[in-house]
Amino acid sequence: MLKKILFTLTAVLVLVSIYLVFSGFSPIPVSTKEAAGDPNNFKIFYFHLPIAISAYLAFALVFVSSVLYLRSKQQKWDIIALSSAEVGVIFALLTLVSGSIWAKSAWGAYWVTWDVRLNTSLVLFLIYLAYLMVRQAVDEPEKRARLSAVFGIVGFIGVPLSFMSIRLWNRATIHPVADLNYSTFNSLLITLLVNFAAYFLLAASLILIKIDNERQKEKVNEIKRVKGL
Image 1 (spheres, rainbow, N blue to C red):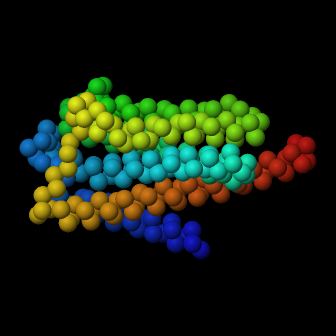
Image 2 (image 1 turned 90 degrees about the vertical axis):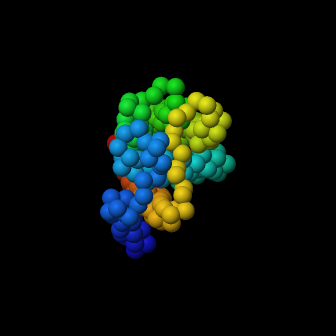
Image 3 (image 1 turned 135 degrees about the vertical axis):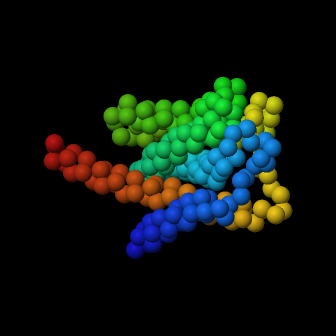
């Protein structure tokens, strides 16, 4: 019942977020003086930022679950780590795609090789893609879970590096700064908060669905082991 409520609320919020962005309610989030392309294209900010933060949160859950697995050796934490990693990789990919679309309008190119935020985001995506590949390469369940947990803990360093990249290397980025003038602040904040809620819940819903699928898969595998199949 709770999951149905969550899924329904997620769908409603995603639809509302799309409406707010494209209905004219939401302002262009950057100064038009800084917008090299069509300023309306900068509204992708309302999707891009929440999706990126959702990826960070999913990877943070991988980190926490990995620590808890190493402490308890309980399989449920390995399942949560795997599920969070898969959803995080999807959201990280969407972050790169939406960022590239935004970059094309702002900078005239889909990828600016020296921009530190783009590069750290790509590295973060590759780290957790490698995490999933490592899991596929190891057959023995306990060894796979243990190795993945270590990878999930060490790999998390890419999250704060990506998040803080603009502040750490502020001369190596041309990411635009939000235009927070008083007249448009309220509508910008409302739209952004709705988008954050929508995509946080979407990530949570996908993780829960993946957890359920993995648990069913483990039950099937256990039955096969018992029967010697």
